[in-house]
Amino acid sequence: MRRRSGATGEQQGFVRGLGLFDATMVVAGSMIGSGIFIVSADIARHVGSSGWLLVGWLVTGALTVIAALSYGELASMMPEAGGQYVFLREAYSPFWGFLYGWTLFLVIQTGTIAAVAVAFSRYLGVLVPAISPTAWIVRPIDISTSYAVSLSTQQLVGIALLLLLTAINTRGLAIGRFIQNLFTSTKVLSLAALILVGVVAGASSGVIRANFAHPFTPADVITIQPDLPLVPAIAATAGLFGLLVAFSVAQVGSLFSADAWNNITFAAGEVKDPRRTIPLAMAAGCAVVVVLYFLVNVSYLVTLPLEAIQHAADDRVATAALQTIFGGAGAGIMAVAIVISTFGCSNGMILAGARVTYAMARDGLFFRATGTLNRRHVPAVSLVLQGLWACLLILPRTRLYDASGAPLTDPATGLQHYGNVYSNLLDYVVFSVLIFYVLTLVGLFVLRRRRPDAKRPYRAFGYPLLPAFYIVVASAIAVILLVYKTETTWPGLAIVLSGIPAYVLWRRFARAPASPAAGG
Image (cartoon, rainbow, N blue to C red; front, side, top):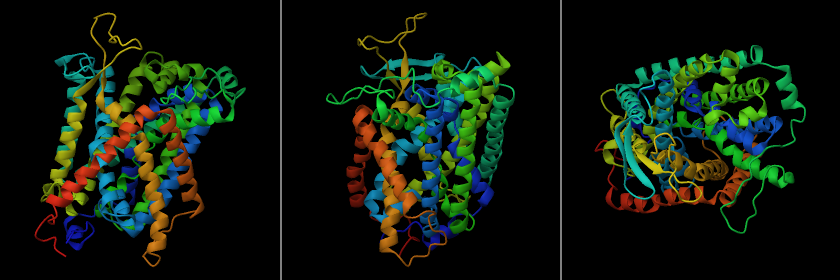
């Protein structure tokens, strides 16, 4: 029979070492990476006004908190390692759980881990110039017209970070928890300091008047070019529908900056009193982060004119704000803050993500070895496999071309510019991640009907209205992305659908339980 990941054997194997504070630090620490310091530039270019920029972050905050409050009920019902994988498995079938877990391992978790690790090394490079994307150890080797592989010092530092944190987390929960608490506390204080400095030292009456004279009148916006030939181009200035489309496309950045709040559910098997702790941790962690994110954007808007936010160099809005206040030292201060933030974010995602493949393996739906714990009661094989795959995602590069099809080159050196494959993969799965969130919240309704007598220590706040609101809004955003960003949505669907043959193969060749002790 299939080994359920919540069986007694697992509960004896894991160490329940995460209290409420620890779990809240996992939630907040996994959410806060580098996005809050960057994505406001792209949002501002789409919506074109200070008011709509703030509304965008408010909507992101509302959706995140609603989803977290709804997930709290599922977590209190099924406090097992695997989290969202388990929720989908129980609400629908093992097939749907596997599709989520497969996509999470292939791209969502590992791609994000890779992106955050390279963000760490990129900003460390501000402090240590030898860490550079063009300081080659292995120069780019073109393997097709679209892709290459390379190893720069920047890539090497990103890989070293992942290997270090993976190794640390195989040493047991206690050390991973310590790192998470330390770095999350530090970066929460860093965001609070950024807010305080911006509002107190950076606020300019002229900037405030300019940004808030007409806060909901879009101006200087980019035109959204749809990928479908029969759909017209549109911008936020084109009436209510144009604003809705621009707003939805802009939500991608803010939603992903606030994502990963569900990671604590992956590690439910290691949480003390999980039926109570996980809902509280998700609510508290999300509330703290969305308030900080909103206030950070207020600090941007009282320090920088909107056009300076829209056109910040490399979209580094926070750096531009601190340079306004501290001059040349601002870039270094911001680099330190982002290095701390990305280090803690990487640790939280590495710690939590490996628990999903562990749960899948215990159900006979992933490599059997990943369903084992080492003598320190952590899924070391799953951690190592996740770490190695994330490292591999750092190595491939995309070859960049201009609109005419000519290679993009550096004017000074004449060398071609390269992008990062994981960046494309993350773009591809935006649509798919939204769909999985929607499916999970629909699963809340399904389980209320199918299992009305199940133990629910916590019931979703605002049910059924708030979960239904999330489902409608997230579905609308997904549909708009499908229509206007087709080229970055259909590959995401392809990645998800690649899980279908994988599921068939695992069902056929890996029906045996994860270990002889996992009977029943």
